Length: 317
Image (tube, rainbow, N blue to C red):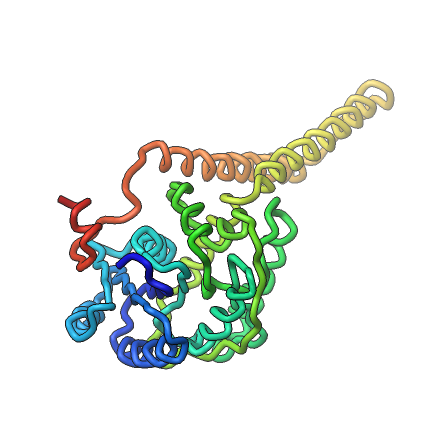
């Protein structure tokens, strides 16, 4: 499979209705480009017939490769598995829900030919998404832009094309909490974008719940920013400063004015406030320590149940 022009990585979770459609559209894309190709479907613990459909596609087309996980390991890990095994000189990452149009791959590929290592798809419009999701996404991207040391493109997902230099760099990043769009930005090289209007999901329901999005956002922040730790430290200094001023005030009232500072309610409120700040700070530190612990254990990112990729099969033996 060496010398392939284009690899397409498609993470899959409960997408049985969309798989035949995205497969047909991808075939038209590679036919239009006139390139050699491989499609790598990663079944991330789907509960429907997604894997059965993927296997049938692989039997009909030898350029279809698949990896079936032993359970659901998450979107970013699924994409990483594809990156670990892809052979293309250029590689596209695209979800199977058809919100990102496969036809845009032609524009991404042609833009890369101008000498870019990364061409990401930047969203102008997000169709079919709730107001809350749009607002939270907008806020998250702009917060990330302000607090991270690496400039991560705003209003983008994982839909992009990357070259072999980027893939080789990503393979040297073994951390457990994957945030690929941040890792790709960190790698540097020549990067640009193509704008597009994102469609609504064609069929099925999204697997990205708000809790998963919150965890994903926190992974991104803790992977590329020390701001939460700095925030905890700064808050500690501010609270300590306020407490010191209150101590001086209490001493002045007692020694100079001979008054007793009253206020049981205010005392309880201050204790609760300080306790909350301490728990918040400990929680932030604990999140970072937890990530250190996960990486020290050095467990594999994913476990493969079945695959038709020869190299991966050999590693499993």
